[in-house]
Image (cartoon, rainbow, N blue to C red; front, side, top):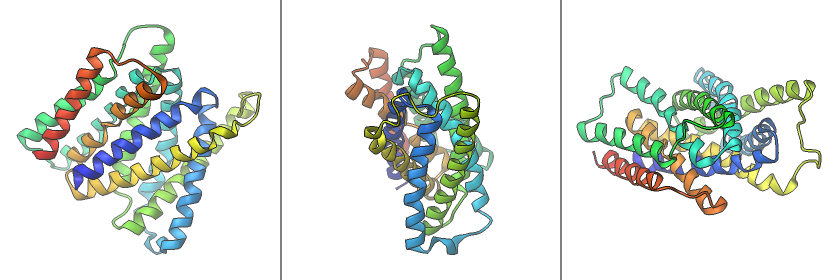
Amino acid sequence: MTAFFALATSLLWGLADFGGGVPTRRLPALTVVVVSQGIAAAVLGAIVVATGGWSEAGPRLWFACAAGLAGPVALICFYKALALGPMGVVSPLGTLSVAVPVGVGLFLGERPGPVQAVGIAVAVAGVILAGGPQMRGAPVQRRAIVLTLIAALGFGTVFVLIAEASTSVTGLFLALFVQRVVNVGVGGAALYVSVRRGAPALPATGFPWPSLPALAFVGLADVAANGTYAVAARLGPVTVAAVLASLYPVVTALAARGFLSERLRTLQTAGAGLALLGTVLLATG
């Protein structure tokens, strides 16, 4: 079950990253974050009320608040990097976020077996190769890499915090709601400061309403991914759950290939194969 929920996390995050990168080419990253996370917060608020999630309020919600502070920074940096693109290059570098939860798991005493250790190494190497990262090139490419590395650190921190934010399903809904409210607050404040400094919150043509369904999908898929990861981390070793959940760049790269016709090189195809092999080793080890 750990593998199932962690792989579901990869699918959801991969599609959310693709969905977030596309509208960021037309809208400022801050606007994308605020709108998508605002929609997610509204939906989660309704779920919390319907399930009586307020009864689960407690000290653990501070972990959700901290995740809400780290999340917008990571999302903004990552969406900006995806907009600079190409997605198949930027997204795989985000897998370095796995170093944070894996490091925490090892520090707390988790020790994967020999097969799982090999699976971790193979999966991470495969995900990085799946994007064929190009470490040389124009300044825009270097900026995208720096933004992605900052985002990876933020995502890894959110991994660790959200896994500690609840101990029950209703508590998880409440924790995700609190996280999103903080996300919107931090993102909204940053957007306000950005506008005061002269940066536009919207393009000259106004809000692109046809993009609203995509923004809603981004926010809801991100929430669902956080939820499935929290379940995966609770059911099994964090070192395994985190690595399987970090396979989302492969999904993003494949989505970019299918919808944007970004071509996959031989190296990228081989990397996707290694990621699949690493997944099998982790799931069976």
